[in-house]
Structures are given as structure tokens and as C-alpha cells.
Amino acid sequence: IAGITQAPTSQILAAGRRMTLRCTQDMRHNAMYWYRQDLGLGLRLIHYSNTAGTTGKGEVPDGYSVSRANTDDFPLTLASAVPSQTSVYFCASSPNGQETQYFGPGTRLLVL
Amino acid sequence: GQNIDQPTEMTATEGAIVQINCTYQTSGFNGLFWYQQHAGEAPTFLSYNVLDGLEEKGRFSSFLSRSKGYSYLLLKELQMKDSASYLCAVLDSNYQLIWGAGTKLIIKP
Image (cartoon, rainbow over all chains, first blue to last red; front, side):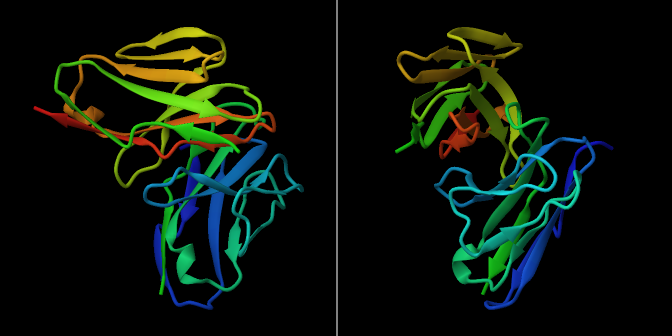
């Protein structure tokens, strides 16, 4: 089934631990994005990638890193988690960065 | 700064019509999107406007006025399944989506 998958679905993480959220798409989209969604706030862009091999910083990049080794995968890493990173994380993709974005199901992360 | 405003919450009756407004101030404009998000789920695409006017898609329509920095989403013949949050987003000059906080729509029987 074509689309975007994310793993894990949810996670409880101790503060200070390292965590990688996985995102994979099979639509051959060039552009991919990581957002966080917090109650009362709009989706906020963490990092993006316009094509394999390139990445860029979004509105709230601090404490997060990404890589884009190939077209399909776009993992997001929290090097040392803090409670303020408790959120719902969505991965999204679009064909070339100027069109509709399609979202994965999200990862619910609780940092204690 | 960039800003997108939409009402936090609206209530409507099943079978009725509701209009959700969105105003924006962004650095550049390359189109406006509306997404639907049911509780606990991912946003899903509803509509896209880049030129002024009304785009109709079944029970849903979206309107854009670029000179006024204004859009609305019109939902007709409301159904209980339309209970969701509706997100307005603008593609800015850097082709980044700027998102509003969303409007939670509650449908009552």
C-alpha cells in the first residue's frame, strides 16, 4: 500500500535518552518533512529535505537532527531528550516541495 | 512575522452549513491549503487555492482572496463524521507551509 509509515506509533522515553523516529515513504517523493504538533499550536516544522542528500532547518530545529541517505527514508533523532520534546511528531512528503503534503500516522512521544 | 489566524472552535448542527475563516500574513504566497484532522489521526488534504475565487469539491468548497489575505472553507450538509479540526496553511515564498492552529468543529445532532 503506497504511503508513509512511521515508527514507533508511541513511545515513553526517559529524559536524557537518545531516540530515533523512523519515517519511510514509497511514493518516490523528493521532499520530506518533520513536524511536531502541540495542543493549541499549529504544526511546526522541525527539519525538511528537498531531495535525497540535502536537509534544512525549519522553525524549531534545536535538539533534533535528520539525515536523508536515500529517497525513501527520513529519520529524526533526538540526541538527548527533554520533557519539552513531548509531542506528536508527523512525517510528511510531497512530490517536489511545492505541492500537497501527505502525512504519516504520527508518533506520540512522552519524555519523562 | 508570519501569522495565520482561524477560530479555535465552532459548533454547528447536523445537516446545516458552516463557514470556517482563515486570515493570513505571510512572507510571500504560493497557495493556501485546507486539511482535515480527526482526533488522534494525521492531517488529510482537503483543498488547494492559488487563484482568487471559489473551488468546489462535493460538499466542501474553499474560497480565496489574495488581496485581503483571506480564505474560508465552506462545509454543506454537515454530517457527524465532519467533526474534526480543520487546518489552514499557506505556502510561503520559500515554499514552506505555515500552519494555523486549527479550528475544532463540533457537530451536534
